[in-house]
Length: 291
Image 1 (cartoon, rainbow, N blue to C red):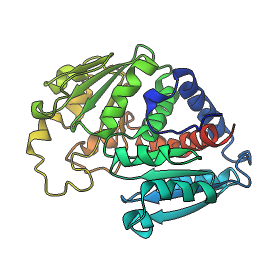
Image 2 (cartoon, rainbow, N blue to C red; image 1 turned 180 degrees about the vertical axis):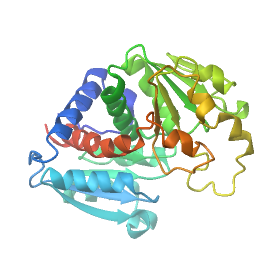
Image 3 (cartoon, rainbow, N blue to C red; image 1 turned 90 degrees about the vertical axis):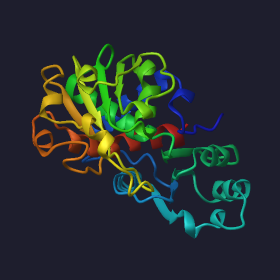
């Protein structure tokens, strides 16, 4: 049986992705009496970026399901020194049952996956953040139902989370409106994706308004002036549909990408979204590790 890596959403069939989300809802309903389906299994978690939600959700999730975890920084491993990715993958495969990585280089993650006999899970790279999008989709389903035909509007930086929403749009059949400074606009957009230079045009008739920090890790000192027209504030939210929700994967820089008024409004579901990282991660672990 082939190894079930969870690295790129388009590499996994739509029915399986939707099945993971369905399982995540079930695991959330069982959160006070979780099934011990990971008993005897171990997950290695490797980080070269700071993490709150990714580390806690994977570690707690694995332990809730009865499994074990080991956490290492990238600098603690020989892969940061003289050891090849090939050797690292072979050794990890002999020690643990799966590995989750939060690292900068997407190509290195894919190379590691080619050199393991265990699942590799993408906890985040500079190119994509599929675990976040799975939690986001779970949160949207909880609040407004089936995504088919819905409109999600993204504002601010054209980053890894936005790019993964692009991958998700044709899978879940929703419309994605991307609104960023024109010099950051995607050079091409895929099926179900439209670019808008004007933020209010992008927000019209949206069911979900989403943003993220304008300054990612490693970009400290970057000017934010050009992003201000894409700030999520009360005026922008007023362009969306009645009952629209606001999402942000956190951490948040108040009065930059979003105003306190939006964060305190009934539309804000950021803490549901953060909790759902835990339940989505548990379902991803189950899909990847249990045959």
